[in-house]
Image (cartoon, rainbow, N blue to C red; front, side):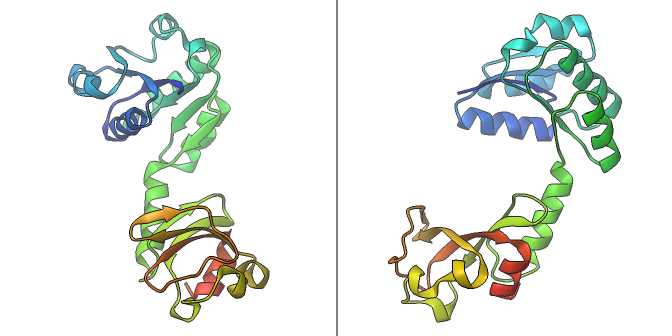
Length: 215
């Protein structure tokens, strides 16, 4: 369990708070809008109304005590930039800030952000890849070259073992898990038999996966 400071409770920040709550982390949420703070109270540890560009206010929160500080401000880049810079000046261990464009990311990284996330850009890419082919069920980008895809087991692989298919040797792709009847099995072995109705999680370079499964 981690202690997390979440600044900004718009749609993006609210979804982060919901998922952090599901993961049982301790979350202090901050926003200038009272209604947003009130709405977040059921699923955060605590919340305050305040201006994150105010150094005295941020300092009062004990920034050094948080494992992660997430700046989820979406509609005011100046405030996001100032908040990011102040958090680092006050000794934040890890600052993750939201960006909408590459130029914003560059400024954030130069002014204190340890990492930057692009929710709109990342979702747009996921949507394009997920729905541009009939047999892609999910997609997780690991870096520019590598990803995890969830795809159905090809018909010509059915009733063969993972060892017989030998996808790792032929295509440099790893099978990370098999989903059977909605349940994900991550303990895969060479003698596991593939079934046509199953789906699988495969990890590898994008170009290798695309070539292997004709994506």
